Structure formats: structure tokens, C-alpha cells
Image: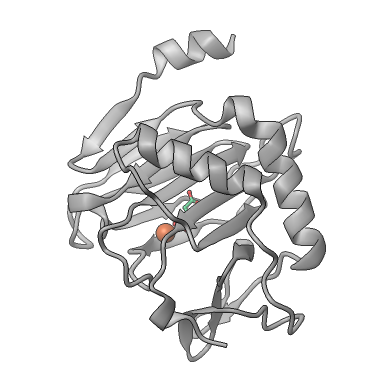
Length: 217
Ligand code: SIN
Ligand code: FE2
């Protein structure tokens, strides 16, 4: 069945530098789930509060730094503001998966400093944004979807350009770099559906290379 889906949903170049790899993570799904469990045992999922209020997706991170938000802005910190501990190290299974996946998408030598893990319950989403806090414009973002489906909008370099709407399923990977590194993207509110591994939840892993000079305590 999975093979059938893979053949019906071929790998697709969405724009220069941006590729959708349907089902690419399926063989690694159980290792990825285990890594999420291990990371979140040390750095629990939480809802950051921004100027706009609490984010609907719960988040955690692993690696040399982690993405954090508060009403004053966004940044990458070496420590988890909730626990005061360093973010957990990136599990090897995650790092190797990310490096292999980036290479598959045409980006050799990917060296992710951090993996941001988003957990979406039904009704959660993520507004249109660009990933631009990393200071490494030559490195792609590698994004993996696990669990229930999501409607992902992928646009251009300006906010109002037309967007492709993609249904991201369990195991789908999106990689955007090069001319698409600063493409606007977002996730519509997750619908109430069921996945045998995750129940009603969707998880998303995004791997990012980050300029060390931008790491905050
Ligand atoms: C993100 O842009 O950080 C998350 C994307 C996703 O959940 O698919
Ligand atoms: Fe993003």
C-alpha cells in the first residue's frame, strides 16, 4: 500500500531549490518517533508565548541550540528556557537521517545544528512565515511530517505570491534551500483525524544549519 502511494505521489520540484519527497521518511518512522520520545522526556513540549499570544503548536528542540520565542522575539538558545538545561543532543538517528535526506534533495554536506520539533493537535496550525533566524542562507531547511495529514502552503519570496497547497502525509519530506530558502510557508489548522502511531497528532521535524554567532545563552 505504501509503495502504491509513493508511486501515485511522485517526488516533485515545487520551485528552484524546493523539493517534496512523498513518503521518504517512512522507513525511518519508528526511529524518528523514538527520538521524539527521548528528546521530549528531557525538554518537554510547550507552547511558546509570542507578542501575538500562545502558539498553537507545541514545540521542543534538540541539538546545539533550540528555537525559542517570547513576547520580545525569536532566537536560538543553547539552553531550554523552561528547564535551564542545555537542549538535548541531537540523536544520531535524527542527524544521519537529516544529512541523508538533504543529500537526496541535492544538498550535500548538510550540517544541522538544531532540530525543531512541532506537535500539532487538531485545530493547531502555523501562520505564514519565512525561516530566517538561522544566518546560514546557503543551507536548506529539511522538514519531515509524521502522523495525521496537514495542508501545507508553500509560496514564493514575497508574502502575497500564489501558494501551492500540498497535502503532507505521514513520512513526507519537504526540503527548501537555494533560491527557495526564504520561501513563505505555513500550515493550515490540523483536522480531527486518526493515525495509528500518533493518534490525533501531527509531528513535524525541521532541521536547520545555524550560524554559531547567533546562538544565545
Ligand atoms: C515550520 O515551518 O516550522 C513547520 C512546518 C510544518 O509543520 O510542516
Ligand atoms: Fe517554518
